[in-house]
Image (cartoon, rainbow, N blue to C red):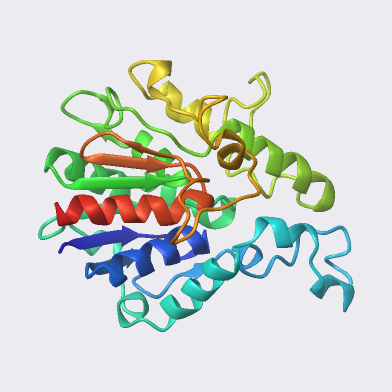
Length: 285
């Protein structure tokens, strides 16, 4: 069995990527340690928990409590149940501070994601966490990253090489196809906050998608071909790419996880069960 450190922001992390990972690892006998910026228990993105706030009528009384678009994008029943269970867990209620976190005594570092800018930017941009990621790679600690967690890894520069820790690695992350689809939908239905689904947006003169997770991660790699996505026509391609089907404890067909030895990566909440199970299996081995 192993000890897994999961750093998260104080707010706005994805409930599925954190809670399902926690539950899978715990159920398989691993110890989980959480770390937040403030050292107090974190809070997930409420929209991804409830689904409320993504419809054009969301600001209206009564009607605002009735989600439609949000039902498709929020955590599913399994993810919401895992989140509620995690909120009561002692280890989640008593995290360490980011500044106190270390890879000493840690067997794996798990980097979850989220997209809401107000909370996630402090996490992805954190020099403290970037140094922690560098230490993990340098120390031979298993690293597992999903969604925007891969972006945190991509921004972690090894001072010995001046390059990202992902340079020379094969990885996936939130793809532009998945990010763009959700963004185009929510920029209409949540018109007062059209960039809700984009953590970083393009500046004047930058091409569309330049600041997407896939594009930035790819720029950190040795070769663009090191960014991996589901190949059209491969088994279960539609399940894996529709953005409407998520994996489960018993069904890994919709998931896509890249195994690069001591580094695992996945794209979005729909990959989380398989992602966490693969990490568990590596720790057992």
